[in-house]
Length: 101
Image (spheres, rainbow, N blue to C red):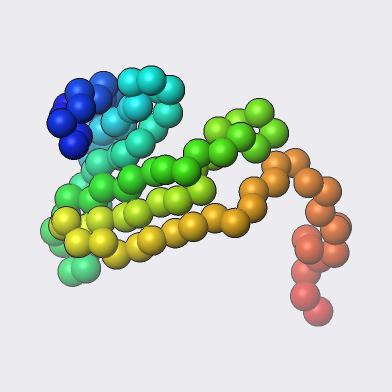
């Protein structure tokens, strides 16, 4: 696959129970830079081409995490997300899991 004139390896995942998913990888780091799939349209009956682009990978506890994501639906940007911090395996207050009275 070519992106901005650069050859990028891609992996297509298929299943009988879901639409196919194409993962586009950075050839230098093997990190996922994009994923493409068909998602349900607004009418719930059709599907539209959807692409998520991942960037600004940072090391968080030994894992590479993309801090910026841009989502395009039918070629139009619908979401721009910037994560400010990520933590894994942090202790949670047990009160978070109490049923409200």
